[in-house]
Length: 302
Image (tube, rainbow, N blue to C red; front, side, top):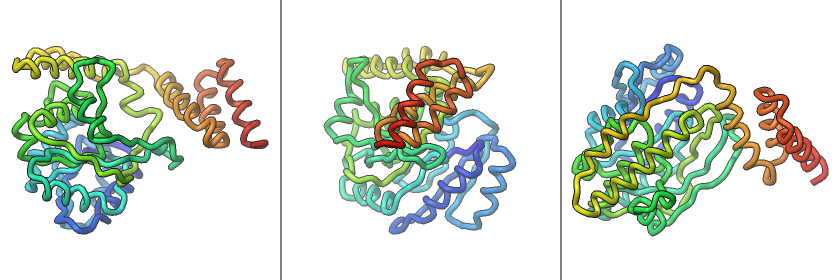
């Protein structure tokens, strides 16, 4: 796990990982130039299973590369700050890898929630769906498991070259696409992970870059399918780096709008909260006002 800010999220995730049973746990936390408040949280855990390594702030991909390099076990599981491992996740995934030597990665189903813990949606998939999505040569068909739902085998990880520093975003999908070309994939059809969706998260701020990188991963699939090197893709991938926004208003608006839209039918009362947050960014937005009124009506009369 890489940490930088949001100490409350970091604490929740650490607690969920340390609560896992049935495995020999080595919990590697990469301090990616973290805020002092986060470092204080790390120091509060006196547990020999935790191993903290530090680096100047370089972003998630390099933190993952350094963390995997430091791992002393064959099975490596991903988790992000703010996510919560549910009971049995590590044990079930590790048993799957031990049972099948030719399996390079194993995924589980995921429940997505907001910063406040409101359930947004479930992510489910089959092995066939993921294999087809990760091996595709069609740009609109790429599909990847939730990054923090995966456990993979370090030997296969090293065989394919691991995370690649050129992919600042979508480094997970790039890795999975290469892993399934040399090993098998398994899915445990159970909800063993809760993952956080934050309006101001990296996905909202850099959605366009992520889409472009996803297209590059598909191109790389095509090259490998023809037994050609995909090195040419790397120079193009490294062009995509974080966008430093002058203001977080547009990002927050898009994120809150996305959350409110999902909740409108299943939880209109919660949706109203996120419509109101949209209006703080853009108080003149007529459609948001209409959808807010609809959510309030449904929360009262449904």
